[in-house]
Image 1: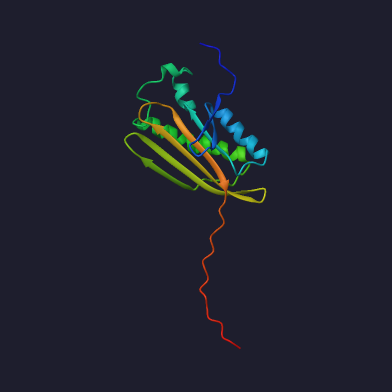
Image 2 (image 1 turned 30 degrees about the vertical axis):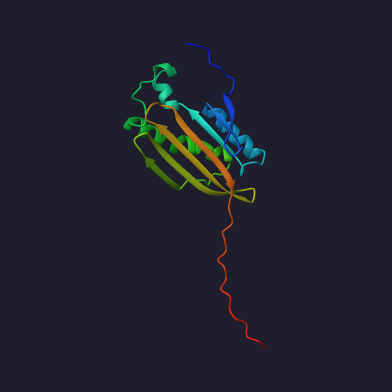
Length: 173
């Protein structure tokens, strides 16, 4: 067994729009980044990604990514079931703890399944330090590997657009 590399694995990519996004390779660094951004009061303008092999898959392969079976992917019902449980019971719960918002429940959720992947989307409106913001977490697993992609985005809440008032004629006095 090889010695584990303790350095956080993170890189920065620039999108076509010119936005820099941090991409993490391990769950702990990802969660620590979210926690630090919350403490720095930047919680409502965060965009980062996580590309990782879920802990339950690593545990099954005795912490050796080389020993992960090829069948561990979005076509495996067992993998999908365990991933969904991991996301709902651990990942989202950990994000809630890092944000220090115990009322966060991610009730607005959806699932899109195709032949190539499965995507779960979790959205929630939250308030922290008297600032309202929206949280979007997208989790995607693929048909060809156990690698999971998580996209985390927070943005200030958009104020509701008021309905235009109908103009009523004013009677001349």
